Amino acid sequence: MSFPTGIPSTAGVAAQPGTKAFGTANLLILVAAALLFLSWGYTEMAGSDMWWHIAAGRELVQTGTLWMVDDWSFTAHGRDWLNHEWLADLIYYGWVSAWGVQTLVYWKWLVLVATFGMLLLALARSCGNPLAALVCSVFAVANAAPFLDVRPHLYSLLGFSLLLLLRLQRRAATGLLVLVFIAWVNLHGGFFFGLMALGILLFPWREPSVAGIRGAVLAGLVCLLACLLNPSGLKVFLYPLAYAFDGASPFRQIGEWLSPFKPGGIASPLFFYLMWLPLLAPVYLVPALRRKLDVPWEGIVLTALTLAMALTSRRFIPLFGMSLAVMFAPLLALCLDRLRGAGLNLALAAVALLVGLFRLLPYPVQAAPAFHYLVAEYTYPVDMLDFIEANHITGKVFSLWNWGGYIHWRTDGGLKVYVDGRADTIYDAATYRNYVTVLGSGPGWLELVEASGADYVLWPHSRGNGGEKLRELVATGRWRPVYSDAVSWLLARTATVPERALEPSPPGPWRDLAMARNSQVAGNTDIAIRYAEAVREVMPWHRDACDLLVSSYRNRGEQGRAQQVLADCRSYFPSEFLR
Image (cartoon, rainbow, N blue to C red; front, side, top):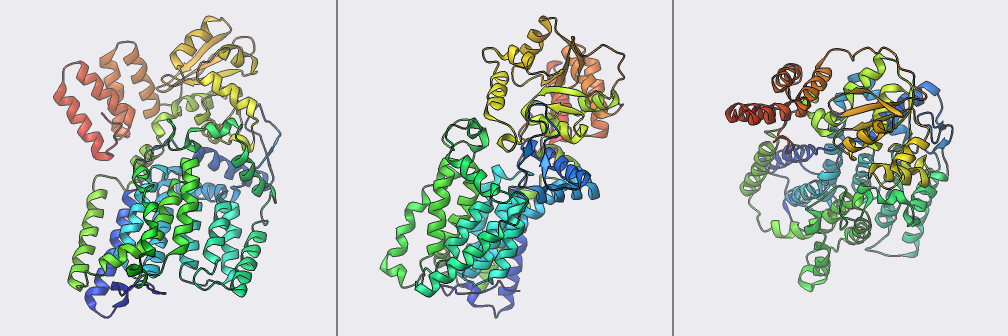
């Protein structure tokens, strides 16, 4: 088995496919790559957008139209919704309908391995050395790991890798590129970056000519026009431009879009080391190297572009890492080409395989525990929504931004939220600013909630000053408690929501967890432990049940038992949040 070859710039291992050892080494590299890529697919993140994407797929099926209006909020109800990721939503909903929501972790892993697998193949072909390609692609996935959650943005990473596979050291047919962009523009807004990357990959860097530039421009224009084949037409082009140039937009202060130098949002420690590597680009101009290496102009220009983007917004850090891999693969290949022994290549490939196995060893491939941690399922008000469904509660609710999508998925518009993760594709800046004031308990937050028109407030115990908000709202006499589960509380407006007899949520581990948490707060440790143990009989990996038991046993001085529970919980998923 051998990697594809194109225009190798060095006499590396990819140029010597004649031996059995070479074929074995390549096979080991492919297997090692898949395991290593997968091992960076266990990022724990509260994937709040995932829920409304699934719900949007269901909405598309229910309405039978691609032109959507808001039916999930009471602040933007009836407003046109620019859902430029409709195809991704349909894929989500189809996947969940066929295999269940927890299996979305398999979707993520498939996209992840496909993305960086294609990057590996593109690098191996361009630099001529599969080991160098493996090292560079592993650094790319490690750099991207903090951002690899269950969201459609993974399709843009996949699209970028596909462009590199089709155009790096190759001349893919324009028709094939057109098909890529027709799919991409309907999967994720990152198609806009894809068009910029395509321009760089199409340019005839090594043999500039009028005819070559003309051909590149024509191919780029055809792909640009192909992107108009979406339900929203030009709006999908205008949206990212408006977002990029509107410095006053409060939505640009959402944590995931902040500069990596600002506090908050997703942290990517490796980026702060890799960001300096582009300074080494002039090394390709050293005469001794120029005689051996082809300057990777595409990689240099892509790296410069994506570094500028990443310094502005941390969400572009994965694209930077992938571009950096293109830039440095030839240089690393030249260094590794000095290790010409087939046996040594086989040994290095075997080491990479063992590293991949070692990294994967602590993690589950079972969907349920992986899903629980990868999307932080334990942070969502599962039992609360069970209670709401059991009592057919409907109306307007002021809730946490991160919970909006989950509420949509569970109630299908029965509870209409104040705001959610769809951000400026549906909501105006004033609505978002008011929400931020409430979240931070800023001046006038209580008045904003009461003036919002919400019938209910659904809020977490431990975030956004949850305890303080609960006390202040109840103290007004205009709000009364309805229910409390393990992560949230629900208040109803006394003037508009009449009191009535309410049914408990259905029996099961989520209700048991609510009982455990409420018992612990009330000081009934023995009862809390009993309910938490009942949760673990059904969901032995449940993080909150594990943490409750560990803290309870420690408080009782039973350190050995606490450590036993902790070790057992970590055997299902070695989360850093299990302490």
